[in-house]
Length: 320
Image (cartoon, rainbow, N blue to C red; front, side):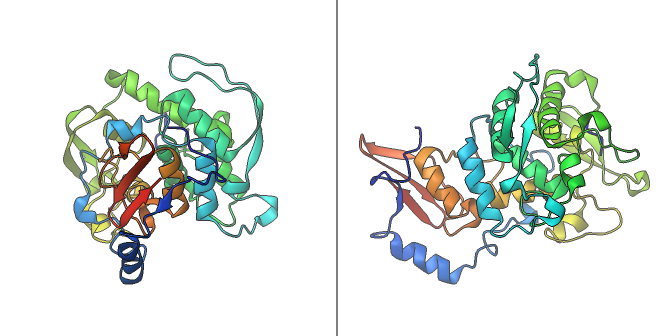
C-alpha cells in the first residue's frame, strides 16, 4: 500500500456503575438474548464509501489517554504467548528517541515508553485520534489482538513506507517510527490536498491493485475519508462488503473496509460523533466498548445535576 472531565480513580466510591436498578434488568436481558459480536457487529449495508469516518472522530487527539489505551489493549488479549521473546502489544515497550516537531506534529520526548504511551503521545502530537491509530495497527498487522506477534509486525506496524510493489522503506522501520510517521503522513495529506489525486468530491477509485478489476465512482465527503483513500487507495467491492468478516473475490481489497469494521466494532459508528469520555468512558471500555453488553452510545453524556451524570447506550446506560 502506498503510505507516503478527568476520570476518577478506581478506588473512588463514586466511580461509574451500570444502572442495575431501573436499567439493570434490561442490560441482563440483552446479555442473554444478544450474544456479543452478533447484532452489535458491523453491517456491510451501512458502509458509505464516501464517508468512512467523520473528521470529528478522525482528528480527536484527546480520544483516549495512555491509561485508557492500556485498558483497551488489556481487554483484547488475556494471555500473551510472547513467541521468540516478542511481547504482545499490551506488554510492549521500547526506548523512544527524541523526535523534533514540525508543522505536522509537535514531536516526541525521549524515554522508555509502553505501546499505549506511544499511541497516546503520538495522537496528541500529530492531532490524530488514538482510536484511529489502534484501528490502523489492527488493519495493517493485527497487532491489537495478536497473542504471538512477530518482530516484523512491529517493524512495519502501520504499513508506513510500505508500497504494494516494493520493499518497505527502512527509515520508517520500528514501532514508534511506524506510529509517529503514519500519523504525521495523515497531517501532510490534510495540509496539502493539491499534492494528491483524491479530493473531496467525485473520484474514480480502484477496487484492487489489479487495474483490470476496474474503478468505482466515489463522492468523498470529508477530509478524513480522503486521507484514508490516499493511504490505502482502494475501495471495497460488493463481494467484500457481502462477506464483511471474511473474503470476497479476486478483485476485493480490504484495507478501508477493515478500518471501518474494526472502528465500528470497537468504538461505535465512525461517522457518529457521540463522545464517551472521562469516568464513563473508563467503565464502558472495561465492558469492551461498542462490542460489549452496552453497545454504542445513543447520545452524549447528560448531567442533570452537579453531582450526577449518565450516558445512554443501545444496551443500557452508565451512571455516576
